[in-house]
Image (cartoon, rainbow, N blue to C red):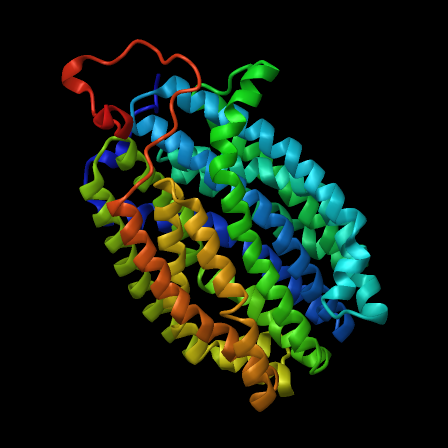
Amino acid sequence: MAGQQAKFVEGNLFRHVSVMALTSSIGLMAVFVVDLINMLYIAMLGRAELAAAIGYAGAVLFFTTSFGIGMSIAVGALVARALGARDPALAKARATTGLIIGFVFGSIFAAVIWLALGPLVTLLGATGETAELAVHFLRIVTPSQPLLMVGMIGGAILRSHGDARSAMMATVWGAVATAVLDPILIFGLGWELTGAALASVAARMVIAVMALQPILKKYGGFDRPTPGQVVADMGPIWAIALPAILTQVATPVGQAFVTRATSAYGEAAVAGMAIAGRLTPVAFGVIFALSGAIGPIIGQNFGAGRMDRVRRAFFDGLIFTGLVILFVSALLFLLRGQIADVFLAEGLTRDLVYLFCGPLALLWFFNGMIFVGNAVCNNLGRPFWSTVVNWGRHTVGTIPLAIWLGGYWGAQGVLIGQALGGVIFGLAAAWLALLAIRNPVLAQPRSRPAPEAAPETETVASPGERRA
């Protein structure tokens, strides 16, 4: 079947890492650019409570999106392993059951969050009209979460096949839809926050459709599994998905604490944090994309038994991270004044934007180490290690330092404390990744019969076969 070859088991690894990360980041940044545009349009309305409401809503949406990220990591890892082991039937089966499980449980998760929006926003520190506006925005956007999950899992399947371009274009088209609808709904129809929410829902619909089309056209589509087959595949999928979801949820939990801690210094501080929060994934979109981009490279080579290439891919990922951080940090520093002006940031809000565009940007290298390390652990059967690193980074690596430094430097201290925690846990992530490479957990056994084996001269030993 066309498109089923494992393209990452040969060729220059740094080139594979660079191409996958850059193409993946374009699609990922397209989504976050939409959030940034939403923030910009809302800021142009000149109402601080609207900008703050977007900040609180973003923290909740980050939490719900983390569920989809964790599920996409699991499905992508299993599909890539199957392709590396030259088992396209298993790859197709895992893609199908992964998509079904993700949609069903994602819908349940979104429903629970929707019912708890009021308490969640209050827990973040929002009060009065700001809290009401944040809940209003979230009540519109949250029900579309399952559609975003379909798009994210579809993108992970495409990247597992090495088709980063199709995965990228799915999110790019979503961004285009929002960029067109935002000014019409927010300004043209005067719907303000409601218009921004409806534009986000439309974007998620577009992303889901555009992610599924290439799978159906180029990679054989999906199976029609029986309920028993779905249940049978839940074991290997949840073995990676559960710790991966817990890993991803740690980030919004830490961000929620930072949001609440910053809220003590007023809406200007929350607005500054919200701007920094929207700038972060746009400026460092390549770093955010690293985990999903390197994952298929690690998974395919692990499935093919090429641990030497797995180790090389890890180090190439760190080198690539360092180069990106140096370039982006210099660019942010040079443009910090213009960035603050675009958002009409003044006073404390401007101070926080300047802080983000200065020394805190350089410290993002250590967050990049965490992303690369997590990709290695997730794809080598050690997803729980990623969970430990992320929860450590966003609890003991965030809360004590944010409280301590916040007492000295106010809102600036909160953000500095959050950044410093990344240094310790970035180093821990790199150490655990190397340990996982030395002691990987062998892949799950096949859940159903594979097609006729390839000729002996073309067979690449899988980890399971090497163990036997």
